[in-house]
Image (tube, rainbow over all chains, first blue to last red; front, side, top):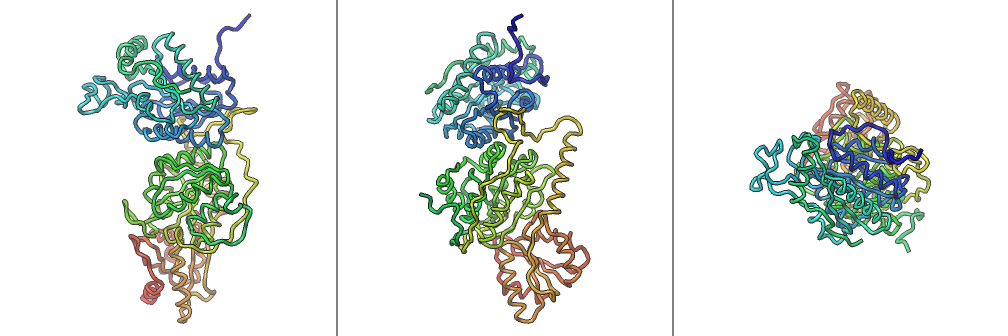
Length: 245
Length: 354
């Protein structure tokens, strides 16, 4: 009998800690499928973030390190400079990348580090149970914006791809979403391109992935997908933001 | 052509900043990440051209935080890596140093200490002794801390620190100040290290082996406690094997001065002068500040009647001297905080008072 579906070699059989409907499982799998398809599992080094995905080193079947909150791009820089021939990527959430680690992402992008960044934007702090993220949209209720994010008091959601697009060192920026099968397939193509750019020595690539956090959003998994489509995508439009590759 | 080849071992005139940098290169370090801060700027500047000259990597990072995390990455990847800074910058690196200790990653960090607290002053000081020897960042850990008192010694200790860091998979710190960093003295260089220890735990891509992971997070109850006990056993081993100190004077000494680093140089002058005047003075100089040489100092307390601790701070190593000696001898303290540098004359006057 022909096997038509299975677990990618780059994923372990470890059960994840993720809630039902969480986007991390899909995003992890997309990365694993891409790593398998590019046949780079034995030369890939990943950097797991602080947040729900902190245990990613248990889920991916290749070399992975943890990093302090916000610092994965600096850690990736150190690894990549030691192993320029290996494939180095960071997997970061919105608090990690766009709040505490803003300096690290901007400067590693500006140095044009030949790394790949998978940026999971779920508009909320998941692991700490639902506080405002730098990407929380206006009006969105979180445990630290109980009346909804108010631009006068809490500022505006940061559009990371647009923010990074002016930097000369950046080669490729694309925003994708995990709210539907066509979008998930598109997300995989973007992730694959971001890895391929690195293999082809093209430079810094980042894919922003709009992803669901049903538990902290207070929605069902199904409602969460609708929320991505109706609330997030209008604020964070999908598509290629920059492509010099 | 290289400015001078790394197999050249003759004596050269160097500042402490340059000597520390050259020592790192000769110890096999090819990855330096740093951010400018006085009084260690010549260190970063030296590495900026010297690293690239020897085929290494130099990155002027966006912050001290980024620099220590680049060190984390390079170390996780199996390389000898380092950063340098001065007190306020070292405070920023403490989170990263804690992660290095938790993940058991080797690294060398040079602190060209300045006076604090806060922005303080760039003048020589020893105000970071507690921070260096008590762990510095969050969590229950230790960093190997070495305190050079000459330019030759900062060269030798940086060279040694890389070996210690690798041997024990632990961060190692050099604690010096502007006096050591900026003064120039002749330095006998050591040869380029060629054979570096193998690191099967490093992240190199999992070709032909199971994946490696590097982490300090242990969520299963009891696992972190076990990890901490493992670290404790390592610290004990370091305490047993890596204590370094120097004594100066004669067997006849009945008054010992205890000082480290640049301050010990000044104190040594006072001891020499005092002995000329007929005083039976001796100097005990800890070289490893952690592990602190408690036992040799305690043994001295059996012979020495009086101890005077001299530091360029409000009295920090003083705590360690008290731990070593307890009530067995009289201990007094003379300190100059905030960048004040004592003179040998001043110290002699203090000795005569006691």
